[in-house]
Amino acid sequence: MKNVIISNKTLAKLSTITVTVLLSLLAIALSLAYKVDFTGNAVQLLNNTEDSCIHSSDFYIVRFSAYYDPGQQASNVDYLQRFCQAVPDTGPLIVVIDLMDKDVRDMPVKVKFVKLNENRAKGEYTSTIYESPYTKPTTGFIKNKVRFLNAGDYAAYVEIGEKSSLDYDVVLIPFSISSA
Image (cartoon, rainbow, N blue to C red; front, side, top):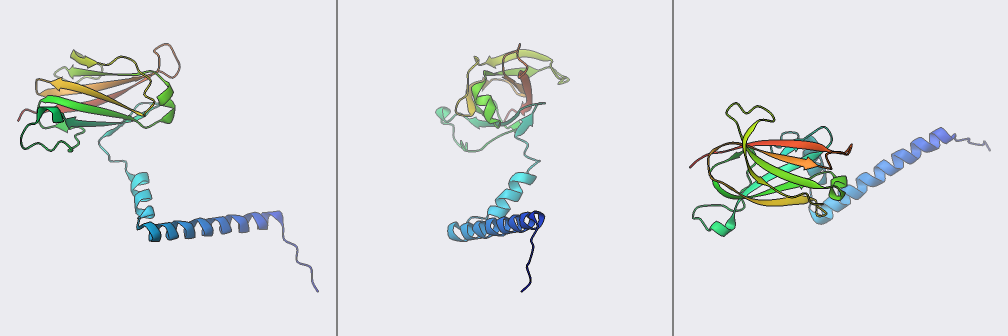
C-alpha cells in the first residue's frame, strides 16, 4: 500500500475549486427556483457604466432622478417617468438624490440647485434656485421638491461632509430643462 501525500497548496486549490463549484450550483438552483436571471443582472450591474443618472466626485457616487410632482395633477404626464440629464418641461419636480456610498449616511449632506450661466462653466452660476439644509440621510437618499420656472441649464451640487473635514466633497450634476 502506497501513502499519498497531499500538500497544503494542493488542498487550497481543491478547496477553492470546491467552493466555486458549490456557489455556482447554488446560484443555478436559486435562479431556477425563483426564476431570476442572476448572471444577467450581475453582468448588467457590473457593466452598467452608461447610466446617465449616475454622477461622481473624487470620493462619492450619487444617482440623480427627477420626477414630475404628482400634486400638480396635469394631464398626459407619466408621474413614474424618471429624468436624468434632460427634463422636458418646467414646473415643480421631485428630485431624488440616491447616495450610493453607505458611509455617507452618517455624514451631513446638503443639495443646492442652481441656474448655470450661459457658457455652463464649472462652478459658475447665475442664481440659486433652492438649497436644502444639512441633514444626515440615514435612509440613503435625499428628496427635494423644487420648482423650475424657466427652461435652461441647471446643476445640482451635492455637498457631502463638513467643509472643514477631510471627507468633504461636492458632486456636480448638470441637467437641462426644456420648455414644452
